[in-house]
Amino acid sequence: MSLEFIQSISQTLPYTTKEFPFNETTLVFKIGGKMFLLVDIEEPHRITLKSSPNEIIELIERHDWITPGFHMNKTHWITLDLSFPHASQSMVEKLIRSSYNLVYQGLTKKKKQELENR
Image 1 (tube, rainbow, N blue to C red):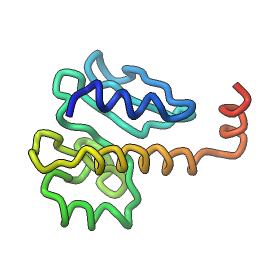
Image 2 (image 1 turned 180 degrees about the vertical axis):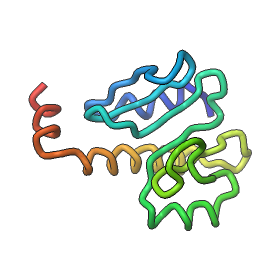
Image 3 (image 1 turned 90 degrees about the horizontal axis):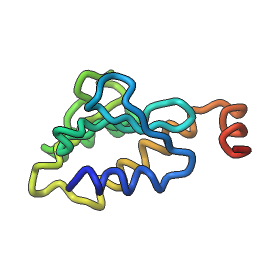
């Protein structure tokens, strides 16, 4: 899976923005100013996503290409190693959308209205 694949999914999600807040290689996708996906553009085979604490344990146990979030809170973030041959594109897309939805649902009502009224 490529950086283009990751970007194509992320950019189709409503109100998504992207920026480089940490350095010139870590691309961050946000909704309402909150991160939902991080990817190093020099090593795009690894992405970090927000996930439900209830799902994280199961995802890590069931998939060897999913680990606790690299340099992130391990309770809320996972890292996907897309270089594994059995890392499924459909699962990656599902997890990206899930991360986006989780962050969007956590936004305040006011922030959601601001996004929708843009």
